[in-house]
Image (tube, rainbow, N blue to C red):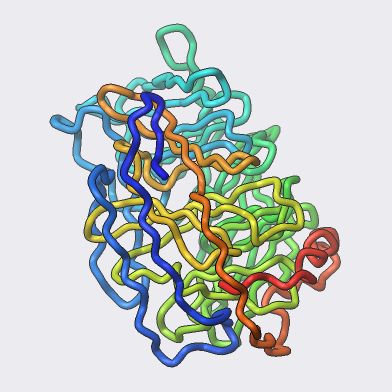
Length: 446
């Protein structure tokens, strides 16, 4: 299996790390210190990235800032967990902060045509490193700038040789984080963290500029959409310095908060990704290894515990899921998942399905905008990349075929513990009904 770029040049072959564990690794049955599976370093062709220092648990990711002229590029943007490119929920547009070798400027990519193409959107002055841009469904690009301690928002669009700009207003305060593109791509959202609560803002798409939607008690981070309507938002919340737990915020009911992840009383449980079609959840928690966060998976509304596959545990590497295959209704175990792997050797790709006991590792395409990508419904992963010769390109790959292993004779019975994803409350009843059917099917070990 090789990753193909449009010019037909095959990439390095995939590397597989077998799981090797005899059965499922449950959150309620933590292991007694097994040796982690070591990551095998992929071959040549790795996309460069800043190496991450080893430590107890995943190190923070540093998204590689795109550049098109590495020899004379400006100073890199500050380290951030954001992807180097943001893609709309429907995959039609993308946006990134690009460089011409001397300054930074927003750039819009059009992805739904015969060939992808980029349109630069420079303003009257260069942008600051770390400026956030979000593509909108109508082709405009939302930009957030920090001016005099205020977060100022504008919509950018191409107009002949120049860039048009529509100011939207500003949000006062300190820490503000843009959320991933919302379903429908008509609105953009952000969270502003205060001293004792977190505000949810609609910063684009409203009638009168940024609109305050809800106040959530506690310190919130993350942000994952749980439905196709852009109503249910999952946030990772800490109350009064306690452990982080993911909650669901119903924006249709004034920000009503519902507990979402409750794996163990003292564990830190964060939702990383969710797929509304299948109900698949990607979770980061230290429930299985206290003090060391691991990646696990569960199903929305399922009675089975969250599982933490050994194949997703790589020594001295940060593993971050960034895309789930959509359209697999009631088949969460069959969803393909793309993961970004950061280690001392650079940044590369992981491809995995919950039904499998191994993660396939691939060298990333040269110039990959690290952390960005999109699955099609038929299982093709599309990865945006930019090089000096190809300033706007899409590399395509899929999960390699895996020889099925014989099922074990006996499978441990899951403990009858509290639901790891307890969505009993009325606002999530619709999501539960859709996902509970998936939970009644025994998930393969892994």
